[in-house]
Length: 408
Image (spheres, rainbow, N blue to C red):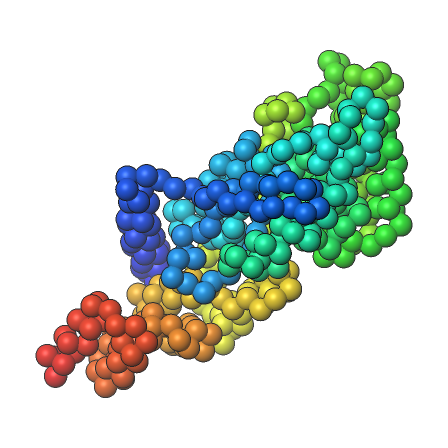
């Protein structure tokens, strides 16, 4: 019976969340806005660089800060990345990955910026080191100074941009935490990059660095993932090289590595599916499985439940390498669920956790006021509603306080 009530309560809260979200979309002069266009002048590259930026809605009127995804070939992949991040982080009540700022980097000279060495048949090639320097010393400091960022960063690149992504991991691993290389052109310059990267991966440590490698289906007819490694024709060189590189990455010291072969996607079609799989893989430690509350949480004592929840968010903080208290909205939702099924001690502990973590949040005190009102403790409910109003005067909380006064 308790589990049935619990499920009904969760569905009700989920529906309320959907209604709340729908009221914030598409209301800006009948336009749906996904980002803004900014720019920065680069002294390193000696040119003005446009940048496309999408900031989570929850950043508005908030002190929240967000990890950042930097997307190369920005004009091609910015929109899909923004939609994917929104879907997995907030849409439909999702909390699968964190909300993130997305920075799209359009190209001005793709050959120059994304290739790590000079080749005679491409005049502007070989500027990857300069472009890495631009990212590290100009673009990232600019983004960090102007927007609500945290130092946790992900770089995403496809094809030559995937090659650049790997070059950055190999030579400048400290710039980003996560690297997503989508069907990268690893055979660049007669395999010189492959050989250099292989040597470094075998000899150096990549602690707390993650790489997701996506492999599109470029298999010549009649070959599979095993037999292609024995082939010697030029038509299979890309697949042979990228699979050999995969094998080396699997043995790299402390590198958190994952990969996937996309049987049904060619080189140009693979970025969207690969980006989705990449963030699901890279952030598989982020989501708190609310099914746990269904299956075990109801039967646990309050101390054990709070330990499980706090340990989960301490693990997130360890990945981020900075403090990450449990999100106020998530803990408040867990508290509402426990209150709805009469597990009052757990509800109180959850609401109190929010007050401890967010002592200046009017919502935290409002929730505790609701808790005491449910316990028919008008004196304590009044105390917490007044505290909430002292932090931020809202009509909803004032109405609750007035109703308490009228009922006395």
